[in-house]
Image 1 (tube, one colour):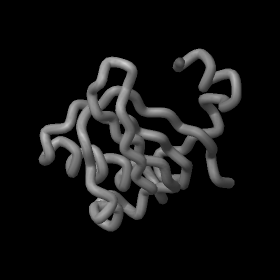
Image 2 (cartoon, helix red, strand yellow; image 1 turned 30 degrees about the horizontal axis):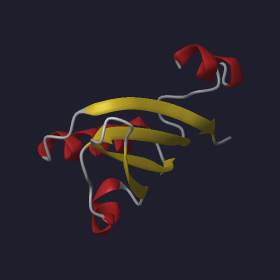
Image 3 (tube, helix red, strand yellow; image 1 turned 180 degrees about the horizontal axis):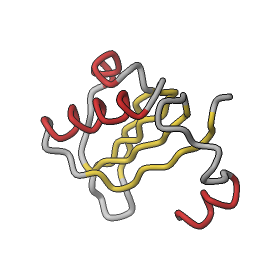
Length: 91
C-alpha cells in the first residue's frame, strides 16, 4: 500500500506543517457524532470480510500536529489503527 501511495505522492510533496488529506482505518466503531473530536473527519463504519467492524476516517488536516491529535483520540478509545494514507497534499 505504501508503494502505491508513493507512486502518486512524492515524499518531497508532504510537509510537516502543511495541510493534507488523510484516510485512517481503525478496527472498531467510531460514532459519527465524534467527527468534531476528530478534526472534522468524515466517519464511515463498515463490516470487513472477517465480520469485524472497521471505521474509515477521511478528511483534510491542517498539519501533522492535527494528525497526532486524531491518533491521540483514537488511542484514548483503544481502537487499533489498521492503516494511514496520505491521499492528497494541499498546496
